[in-house]
Image (tube, rainbow, N blue to C red; front, side, top):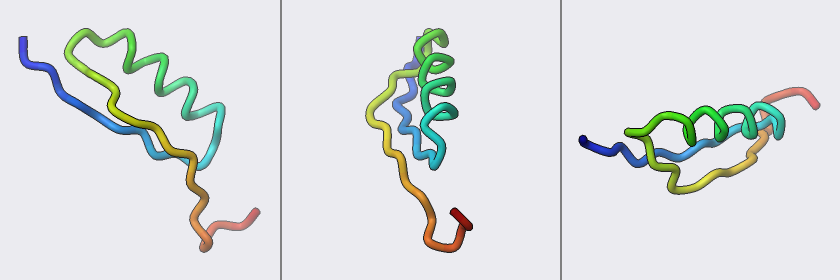
Length: 44
């Protein structure tokens, strides 16, 4: 089975956690890195 390496870039910590949990459950995905980044264009 081919494995796909992926990264998660998210501005919401909870969304990053949920996405990371999903990636761990999918056998053909391999998580390489995560980053919490807020765009300066988004309101706080």
